[in-house]
Every structure is written in C-alpha cells, then in structure tokens.
Amino acid sequence: LADGRHLSQTLRLAWAGENPDAQPVPKSKWASRFGSWSDYEVGVHLIEDRQNRLMTTKFDEKPSEAVRKPMKEEHGYRFEPEDQLWYKRINQAKPRQSRQEAEELAFQAANMIRQEKGLEPKQAYAQGM
Image (cartoon, rainbow, N blue to C red; front, side):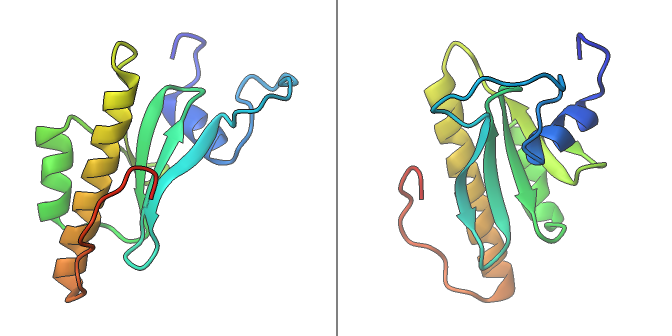
C-alpha cells in the first residue's frame, strides 16, 4: 500500500475492526466493514471492507479447487494466505455492480460447497441475505 503497510496487515486490522492508521476515527453512521452475506451452514462469509475498498470472501474451511478456480480465473479474486481470505477491489466507477457481483459469487460458491457436502442448495438469491 502507499503508506508502506502490507495488504495482509491492513486486512487483518480491518477484519478486527481496528483503524490501521491508529488514529481516533470520528463516529459515523457507517461501519468501515460489514458483513454483506453469509451462509453459516457451509462457512462462506462475504465482508465489505469499505476503508480499503475491498470485497472479501472468507471460508471456514479450505474450499475445493472447483470453488477456488472460478474465483481467481473468472472473477479476478486474489488469495491472502496470511489472513486466509479472498479479496477483490471494488470498482469505484461501479461500486454497486462490484458489490452485487461479489454477493452473487459468494452465493454460487456456497451452493457449490452445499452440493459437495450433499446439502440442499439455496434456491433464491436476494441482495443482502
């Protein structure tokens, strides 16, 4: 990052809800990061990190190659090994579209994991589930 921090340091602080700049943050109505979508049964969690302008997907267990491959090859996600999460920058020209695409991908990944575990897939996708 421009200030010399590594991405993993910034992500770890953001996931912990801390301010990476270690300065008091004025109270506001908006959280710097929040959960957009989760499927707790199969352990898929989509988190928007507004401070760093990232959509992050965290899995409770390492997903199969069939789940990981489309994330990196088709959707351009990168894996952060230190924090065990996948991330992609939010397109600032199209932030709503970036968020929706991330939610759809997390939903798709969760259903793939459901299928691998022999669980019923979720039938409907609704933004902000």
